[in-house]
Image (tube, rainbow, N blue to C red):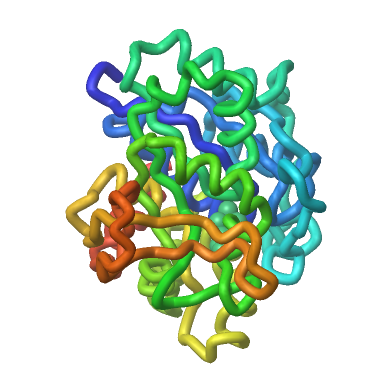
Length: 314
Ligand code: RIB
Ligand code: CA
């Protein structure tokens, strides 16, 4: 895997996280997954780390190093999303208990040690949940900040506004202080907000393509998306659900499928009604320097063609 991009996936599985992890593990030519770090988010940490191991074994990759990270946001009480993902976080299909081990040691220490061991500028962090682990690593070891190649994350919203409050997207809302640390860190950011993920909607045909694979991963993806989409379809009246987190991995593999703008994005941490909002200066009126490539659109057919092609390989 000499040319493969070295990544750490930080995640709170979550059905969409699961599809993202499967996509990454199905793409070894492009991506070298150094490890997976679980964080509390969609469901508590005890479930997100368990779910991460279940997903790795489903992909036939019990060798992947999975670490448990932070069980709560830096300063706030944890807010979870069982109403979207179900009690286990991976509701939909019946799932086997994981047999692969959880790595000893804290996820934050793994992030720090990996960034210190790998050459500077060669590791990309891919957060798919609240940014607590990343922020904690930056606070604990500021020397690693300049060593990060890029952070490619799912989070935030601007034109699409919030999904957990009228103003805020869930990943940012759960730990706005952590997000503020990451967005002020100076690390090159690629942000995949609801503005783009809400254009990557499942459809009956797209889900049928997963089921038609006749493989366990294909069946799981179909059953996860069947379960996951009911919330968004009811809430938005849409024909399908946004596959949020796989957009991060798809961007790493085929960034040409996406488009966005380099702009300034700041995190609201004080607002009575707007805490967790990503204040995206899309029209360049703030005078603040650009700190993020904020993605606004995707070729949805191309995205699902990539996803289907790769999941089929597992
Ligand atoms: O708002 C969507 C994000 O919150 C996704 O990452 C989903 O998995 C949840 O973590
Ligand atoms: Ca997630």
